[in-house]
Image (cartoon, rainbow over all chains, first blue to last red; front, side, top):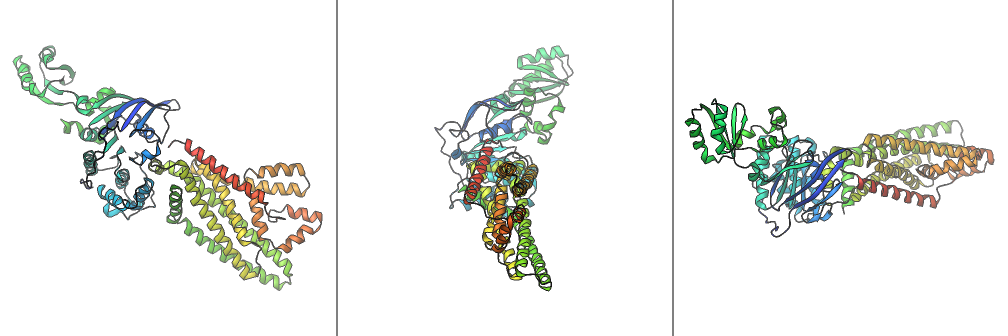
Length: 333
Length: 288
């Protein structure tokens, strides 16, 4: 994919209301509460990460916002208009989680169909289709039938469909689920370019590194409820220092207490909220009381750690779903 | 015009999935084989001194049977095109990206219907006229209204297609196809039952069955096909040959003493519009 996402177009959103605004948005399927009173705002031009484990209600939220499903309670506005407003949908792009495009059409046909549905003018249509193909790295496969595409290529096509015609708001529901590491990197580059262009991006994902790398703000959702939200920096808070020491526990805790909130994560002792520039001072204090130090790791808490803590799954096993995200913690430190 | 866009897409799908080609090739095979059969029939009849009137009645009856086969093929085509039209796209997820565009749900339903109806009607007219032309060439028998016969065949397919499309907004494709085929069978049986009851003078039963025939108005249209293919002479012979013979002939599903009334045809138009309206309402309420 080409990271250079065609020429810039300034989206005139200054002074306008939020791109997405929800108030108690809820959806119940039978006895299951898929989304339980979602209230949030996504500012224009922001890259917003909507995080949660599988089944948390992320896709339901997107479907409600796009008018594909009806809320059982609450309301929402998209680009200033109530959800379900047809004209607004011309300004919105969408890559579904379950992406499927007509196998008997060529990639160019699929984009042409969506260009027509989105109401692109005949003069802009060919250029927009070429742009979309080039952006997602399918410029040389435009004339091939979708049925011959690998899953990853179909997801690239889906991304091209979502970006077609430069929408003001793009919903990407698990956009890298079928992509290899190179493809994921390409998607990150595309999202960065979208941000540069002023496009609002609503990114649904359970891949935390992905979110951590591209999002300005996040909301963490579990069992249909938002359990935390805000700018990524605020959410992750201060740095965390992990010390491996064989010193006597009470002494070590007493020495570390002035530096932050101390807890145990055997064999580590963890100090949260310790500014990184105080780490040498912290180590010196431990050495001063004669506590042998075997290792020190200092860094900000990763999104994955914060996420697991919020969801109450500290055990490694519970993070199996995050395995696909690779070495997220190590990279973030 | 999103309706035309979806209709064009539906036609393109039929073409790219080779449905149209399959129908064309099979039609050519059927027309050629029946042409040979008609030639054999005429040769044998001439050898055995069968009268021209008897031969015309015989040829027209075989032609009506061929038309029945086409009506069956069209019914199956309509059921299996209509039933997955929306259900399959819902199941596969193709509709997710499309329905998120600024398109009315009604446009999706009407576009699909228009595309499929064009296929059904086009196939009926092309196959019907080809068959009639070959019969005319081989036997010299030209039915009174070949275009009308084809149009009635196409209309039957459109009626069944509309029902299948309505079912498609709620049931999975396979279930919808099965339901549509069963409805076709039931409607045909109701037609035969009504005729038999009428022929036997069982007026109250005939009236009951007749009203059931309006629920899915296929039989009336089939009568239109038959009437358009019959020689007027045969109609005169059978209709005027005494009450008893006339009644037995009337109970025959391959004989029609008259074509559909204009009121019935208007009813069919209103019926199709109502079913499409229901399909639109159902699909609007459907969550994707």
